[in-house]
Image 1: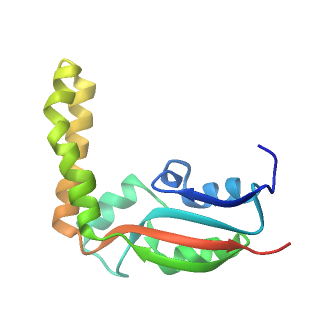
Image 2 (image 1 turned 45 degrees about the horizontal axis):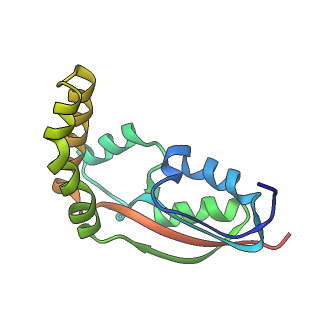
Length: 150
């Protein structure tokens, strides 16, 4: 794809795979000046958190941070904030974790209860347990930012 052709890049949950700042830097070149970047990203909802959840998520994803710090990253990389909201707990539970839990047994059967499959399920169960215990401390933030005209 040629550079500076897109009016908007919309990404829900995928920038996590690249890292927030790396994704912003990588995708910026495809946006026209004045184009928009709309991404969801794991985000702390509070400045202070219990040690257990802090340790868990800092081990899972080093770029987890508060919305204010995520906007600093956007601004440092040539964007101006245009909007933000965080996803409600129902998004995590009803639309993500509950359906995953419902599929664990079939997943394990399809993979003959291999050690790898069991480890995947074990890791997912741990994340779900941590989320349910500490759901008031994190969510996916949805960030909308406008590329500064250059």
